[in-house]
Picture 1 (tube, rainbow, N blue to C red):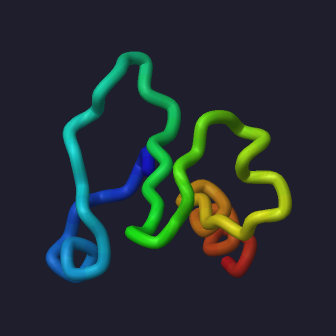
Picture 2: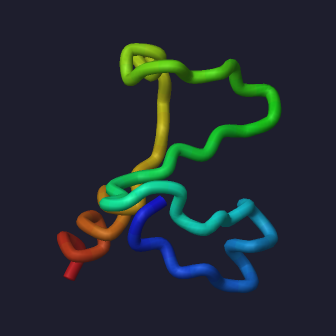
Length: 62
């Protein structure tokens, strides 16, 4: 997830990697029981979280 700072509390909840490509826009991280994703269409109908969305919600509350 681009723009996500690695913290101790986040390390307890998620695994982080070094970027695997440049320019890096986003990395999608799924859980162990999630089916493999081959394309954006595989996300259709699924719920997912974006660090950008969370940041914009925080800005909107100010």
